[in-house]
Amino acid sequence: MSTFDQREDSFEKRYVHDEELRFKAEARRNKLVGLWAAEKLGKSGADAQAYADALVAAEVSADADERVVATVKKDFEAAGVDQSEHQIRRTMDEMLSKAKAEIKAGE
Image (cartoon, rainbow, N blue to C red; front, side, top):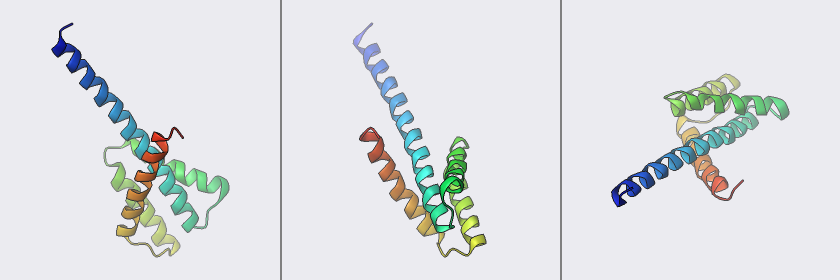
C-alpha cells in the first residue's frame, strides 16, 4: 500500500469516526432537550423518559433539528409554556455542547 493509499485510508477512517461522534452527540442532545422540555411540561419519571426518547427517534430523519424544534414548540404551546423558538434552539445548542463534552469524557 502506497503512502497516498495509507493517507486516504486514514482520512476515510477519520471521517467515519467524526460522523459517528456527530450522530451520538446529536442523539444525546435530543435526549437532553427532551428531558429539559419534559420538565417544563410537568412530566417526570417514565413520562419524561418517553418524551425524551421520542425526540431521540427524530434523529433518524433528514430534517431532525427542525422536527425536534417543531415538536417541542408545539408541545410547549399546547401546554401554555412560554418559550420562543429562539430559546428552544439556544437550549439545543447548549445541550449539543454538553453532549459533546459528555461523549469526550466517556460518559
